[in-house]
Image 1 (cartoon, rainbow, N blue to C red):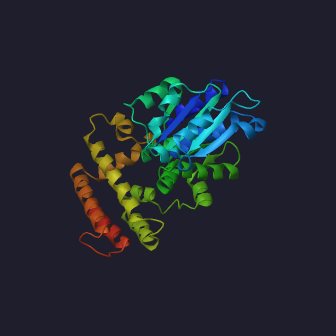
Image 2 (spheres, rainbow, N blue to C red):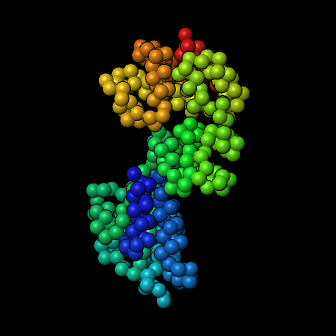
Length: 334
């Protein structure tokens, strides 16, 4: 997991085990920024930074420029730090960094922030960086991994969060960890140390309704609570910008796909692991499984796909999303 690897890198730096090269790459910028910022703020003292810390941007420099800066000697300091941000702009020539990586300047800490891309693991540059320094890949989390990430980040700060509140944040913010972290930081500023973050707290401070959201719609459908489900869909239809149909369809498709898998489980005791969900929510699948037999679930998945196509204008141009969701509910509850 990137979180554990990030903690290890920071621990090594704190204990004086500082590598000459940190190549930070991958689809998730949150960890890349976190490690880069930590190095920028802590490796040198404030006095040393004036002469010994250089920030470069990939769009403005060449590999030769980076190497030239990296080969400089520090002034009145043990080391210098060279950070290259947005280095993915140098992807066509990044392999030219190899000669420097093979023989890095021992008094330089070179940090390459290579966002949204990664090196070819088969090539020599990647293998040499692993040998000489730190090669870190920051992978994007799947949405079903985000609630647990939220819990662990908050636990590290002394806070707790209910499973439902974590799910609400994930549904509203997706798997953009920088955006999620910004909202968590806001809550930490508002709440006393050691507080528990509940759906009420999320609703009051982030503006996510605890009653009208996709998570509550999923619960209502699982319980076959038609009145509640149609009320939520009515609200979505009146607020389409805040509740885009594409998100609702994606969540319901995921829910019923997992429900189909739940029906096929040989050992329900392992359901949480097999479905990739928090054990807290397994009771929702147990209830939904009683309300929707396997054959019915298969039909619902087909209906979700049909509504998804209609929402994209195939066979039903300009139909309001609220009407499409009501049509879907009719098919689910029939």
